[in-house]
Length: 231
Image (cartoon, rainbow, N blue to C red; front, side):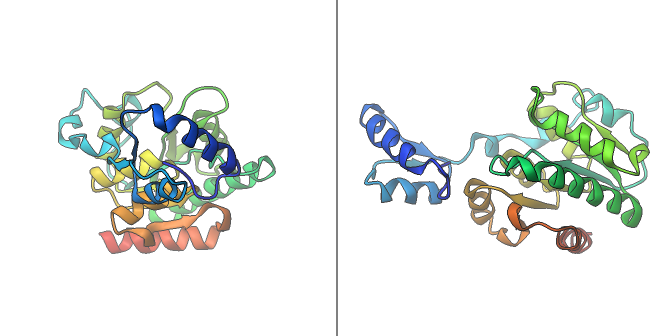
């Protein structure tokens, strides 16, 4: 994916123009990225959907495939997966505000929807999603109703976990795609064009909220509206 609003656009244009003649195939994941390349004068690229769309979700659902944390959670209450990957364009001074916001939203879902919360990191290296998930958990009031996936799990195991949830809050691109292929109702925090383009491809743009215009009331209202309409 090629983001239209990237801050290093001129460098990317130079790299694409310099390297594209040496490539046998140029592929992008969405039509928005194709339009960006065409605007650079590169007109031989093709659109190939993200390979994750080809994953068979039914082949992932078995007790053995489930992450340990899911297997150990009590059944009964609705389960919400929050995949809060840090928006890469979020300036450092707003990271704490973003973390507080997701923690407040998670608490609200526990208190008003009776939910249990599953915090799902997609990147587990230092400084990435797992640390963010742990910090969100630490800031929640209802930590007893929440858990973070701590081990390194195969994507198929994450898909197995999503097959068990009732709703998802997505920030990473592949969390949106996983929710689509598992037919889980979701709301997406749109941090880059590539996320918006996937929503547009699925004709679900109304499920996206701009990462830089988020507030508590807007996010909770959108989640409750989408979730209740999916029941």
